[in-house]
Length: 548
Image (cartoon, rainbow, N blue to C red; front, side, top):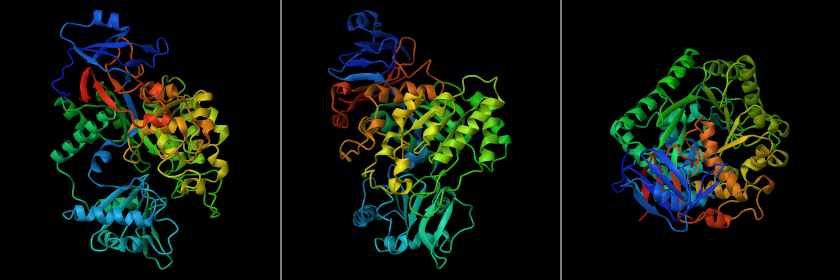
């Protein structure tokens, strides 16, 4: 693994910070000692000094908070690395702001053939009296413009981008994927779901192996600076496994990777056997394969999430499942039989129910299997009767706190308008899930939103945006305590990947992965947590990030 400031993993003694261990047997301590890749002592400072091996490095963080390493439980690291140098549209709420940001980026990057951006709210291009392409043409017409929504399930293009892709009159792709057309049969500029925006992205040149390596290493270092020590990759494939394996062999990884292999309805079922073999082959502390990832639906903002009742806009639409529910159930049963864990993207309440039904069917069909770690990604809406089933079935609720309160008031957002007030009451129900026995595992879905855990912690504690909206919080009864939130980012993430015996807590004999803030988060008001800084990140007993 790469060294930071000449560090080795011969041994560390960390003092000065209050230590939150996330270990229910001993949640608090004064100091931590490591030797090689393992924690060798957690306890009092006096005894820690006595237990420290000769030649160990002493790190003192006065007044800080030392905690287990943050485990980013839902991320697309390759995609995140690719957008590091693209136009970030986070926070843009009006068409005027969008125009200013796009034009400025174009001026600053004259060498770029395309203007591509990400993180755009649905608000600026919503409710226009003209096709979206026309609004974007008015901003930039002489270069193709391609902007992805904050959730990466929708994109918008100007006319030149549509022309280059040859989709000005649509494309023959299956719903819910769609090149949206107007009444004259012309593409409006709005693209829904993966197969639609792939028609644009196929035009871009593939980066070289060296460029990909450099971007991935830059992305890992970025996450290290945020205190992240492990991540769960939601778009795994055999090529990525080989890629991470090579980087590990070269000593260039600074994050532990846990992959879920992307599985689609149209894939030959023989792929499951291939994926099960990958789970056996890639199974170390640095580069693991846990199982498969599927999509049962899309997102609420584009009405591709599968709902039990129609959307609240009067359209009568309920969303179309991303894959046939029977195919999803069949794949779940087969993957479970092969010993793989399953992650399913489910945002609509019908999508969540279909996924729970499939996992329950798999448990019945393969009753002899133990230690399942199936999970549902997102759970933005859920019928109240299904909340207890999550814990009862042992399903991990893999959720992203910042999705509940991104950079716009959730009371008036497109999400809330389409979901309607009744579903909003049960949206992102963290407290209800915990109360009924479910395990939470928190992440960001980066690059959908920032991977900075501070923003997720703030959202989980307050259910308010970073700007403080709404006052009092959005359905604040679903908020969590700080300990519950940190546990979801640490031991919850470790449990989700079946690794709670070796990481997620600070306990003797566990992997030496930890994060240290410059302030004790437990002594701060929630808004102050956004200003706390990560001053130390350690992975495998080695310092991968340290501030001076």
